[in-house]
Structure formats: structure tokens, C-alpha cells
Image (cartoon, rainbow, N blue to C red; front, side):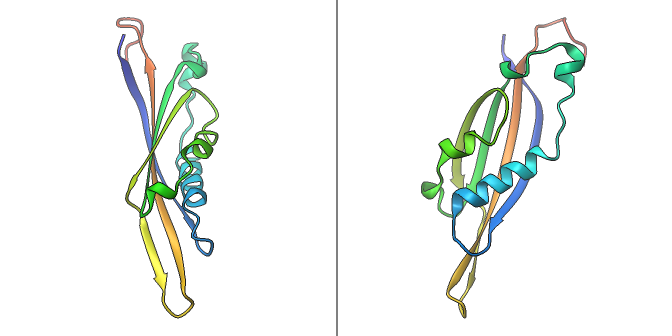
Length: 119
């Protein structure tokens, strides 16, 4: 049966001084996760590890993101992480530093058999 998206959460994160894109993405994912509570797994007797979680993070240098490290930020399910162009770099010309701002979208999908649940 096709997976159905049951939640989409967004978050933002930053690394103000280290120019670490992975750190900014981790914080964005944590921000998104802290906005959600998936009580339906317990309420409906679903296995939370059976969900598929698609994580998309956006930063100015997606090639510098360690997507494997980001997958460990999500506690349940099969995790897929993709880094894309997005986010924002804020330059401080005077200090010679760049602050990194990342955005994250976390989508959880589950297999809901037709007719078993009325949502």
C-alpha cells in the first residue's frame, strides 16, 4: 500500500561562528522535531519504527553537509536525508565570519491500510 504523509514539520537552525553547515542542519531538524508529537502511533497501535521519515535540509553549501550524521537526529523510523540549496549565509565583513542559517522539512509517512482508519 502507498505511504501516506501524516505530518510535515519545518524548522530553522544556525551556526553563528563556526560556519558548520551540518551543525546548523542538526539544529534545524531538532527545531522541527520539537514542534511535533506523534501520539497517533500509541493511540492507534502503530509501530513508530515502521514510518519513513524524509528529511530535507537547505543550506548555501549542501555539499558540505554530512547527511549520515543528520539521520541520527531522528529517533524512529527509516530515515532518508537530502541536502539541497537553500538557507542563508550572513557575512560579517568586519569580523570576517559567516553565520550559517539552515532550514529543514521533516515529513513522516506511514502505510495506512485502506478502510482501517478514518482520518
